[in-house]
Length: 220
Image (tube, rainbow, N blue to C red; front, side, top):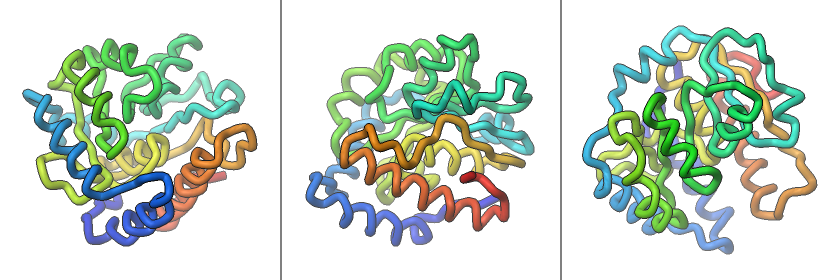
């Protein structure tokens, strides 16, 4: 299990901020987003409950790539952890995720409904502050795991990870997953925007780092 301390994560975060500076990424805005998220939460999920969910379990992390349906193992026996809008696509396939990680730019109203029954990691970053204010009040706060990519300053958690997809894998690892596999990840998707392509590059780099630390093949 790789438990991330911020000092371990900081070199990656610094590089991400520098790499996306032209796109407006700013660590001060990340901190302000964390503050806003924590200000609208009246309670939160506990680490013990997440350890019960992930600890010692096989986890399939499902991304929202065009290959989701092709990759998905319908016979998978373990924890299904969805990255943002992949949760909605899974539901359309008759598959209910056990966990969702989201920055609220996919299907936030649907994810709010899911939060009645499952844990949802809600991520705060500089450009989703309005979404936090708009949607978080409608979630079941007792099932929310608040996360940040900056140094935690207001009570959120930083488990590592940058995009919803790779962050989900880092969360599963932090809480003791015995095995992590991916479905619906297409790192070389030529149909996405330039900024999305850069994010996918970072997701792959970070997952490869996690793969090395776990001594387990994750990125195939």
